[in-house]
Image 1 (cartoon, helix red, strand yellow):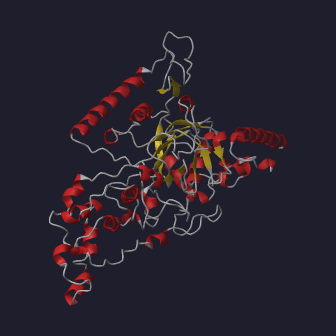
Image 2: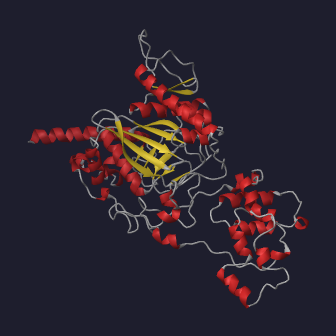
Amino acid sequence: MISRSLARALLVSVALLTAGGLLAGCNTDQASLATNAKANQPVPPKLIAAMAEKDMDLQSPILVRLFKQEAELEVWKQTRSGQFALLKTYPICRWSGDLGPKVREGDRQAPEGFYSINPSQMNPQSAYYLSFNTGYPNAFDKALGRTGSQLMVHGDCSSRGCYAMTDEQIAEIYSLGRESFFGGQKAFQLQAYPFKMTPVNMARHRNNPNMPFWKMIKQGYDHFEVTRQEPKVDFCEKKYVFDAAKPADAKRDPVFDASAKCPAYVIPEEIASAVREKQAKDEAEYARLVAKGTPVARMNTGIDGGMHKIFAAKIPEGSTGLSESAEGTTLQMLAMAKAPGTIPGHVNPPKPNLDVAASAPAPQEEPVVAVSAPATGPRVASAAPAEKSSSGGFFSNLGRKMGFGTADTTATTTPAPQATASVAPAAQTSTTPATAASRLKAAVTRFVPGQDKSKDAAKDTPKPAAVAAKTAEPAKPDTRLAATRPALKPSVSDGAGDSAPMMAGAAPVVQSNSFDSRFSAVK
């Protein structure tokens, strides 16, 4: 009995020393997984049950994929067959920047590409609850001279170049990574994409200047899709290479350097043929979509990042920004749904970058706006004659109360500010060129949720006599959704607030897998 206890104590001591060495690279002072309660939370029972249903082991390897446009983080886990299967999809609370890779320090871009996460990149003492470093810049980024540091996946739903989750979400994701390391995985792969690399998304973004880069990382996306295996990633000639192997007549594995010429290598035929078949289908569908005139996605450079619709629905004047809501699902429909975690009070929805918007050229009129308003003038011109006073009689006042025949009614039914300008009489239309201030105002009108477009347009456009009547106060934005946001973040011991679902991970389930039980002999 004594010898067993001694042996166990020695093993735990070795484990602690190893963990301490692995964490030496963390962005903390003497971080210790073994004594950190947040980092020691067990995997929730529901997730363990899902693993059992999908033939997965608790400590089998994981793989993470991120998508900006969909605002989703996927955790894949290896099954007992050796292939990866999707375990769970997490909505991303906030990401910053634009669609496209990170280029330089301070550009607020969340990185895109393939990265490797080892135990030293796990940060149990993060200022944002828990986090792990993405590993940006990788060898490819460095070969292109790209700069940046401390790009994380973390909690707190606040981003400046990171992928931000809720605290409850990152606790769960962190626990899955921790268990994979306990199971022997040396590092898990992080794949970050602008969107799911489908033919329709590639067609919609075909004019984006980042398309050559996206086509390159789509190779890795396709390798994973057809094999359900983590693709081996190498770099040479400033490009990605996936699943490279030595030629049949070679005596040693090829040596890759991101900035040097590519060595001789081959891609295993079973992988190469499956990838070719998938890409042929994708290209045929892409060509069909382009031929039928699939609209090109608008370039919204001034908007800072995105947010999943489930979170945007919980914030007054919330917006998904560059992330797109699912078809048929509106923010109002999701307003009463429970958010996957606590949303902090300081969270801001995506908004335009006013500096970028001010320097941008004046927005062009959309053809649909030009034809949306009748050429004879707004509907109010016939409802409120110019000779009538602003106060009106009994019936006109009653009409205004009922929502008929007012300038506000016309303004709110006009699709865009340009429509109001286009219906003004020719004699009163201003010919003064757009100023920097008007361009800024127009850009903000296009991008800021809840912006009163008609009011701004009315200031810059002389009004005909027919609409000279005093307008009513603009309706205030509906702030009733604010009540659905929890006021305070939950503590580790208390769990989530009443308005956020209680995470199953708050209750210990597999004690043998926790840090406390493994390292308790030396406490």
